Image (cartoon, rainbow, N blue to C red; front, side, top):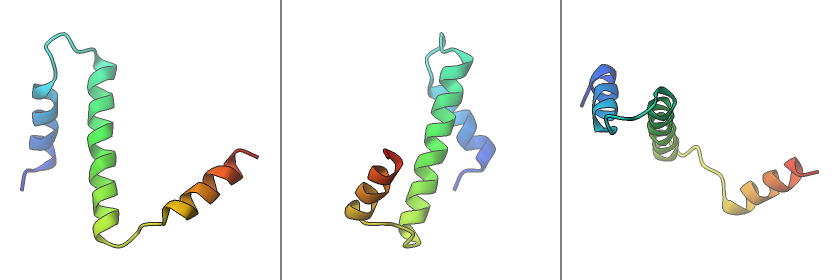
Length: 61
């Protein structure tokens, strides 16, 4: 398994040479969100689509 520093370097290196700072940060944040989501899923911290729909509807009020 890669270290955090290695993973960050891989993500940065995969970006086009003309990438802006904010684009690289967005890619790093996206990668972290995906990693956290997968970890939550593996550990059973999930909710149903119906529960998510209910939560979204309460936000819209």
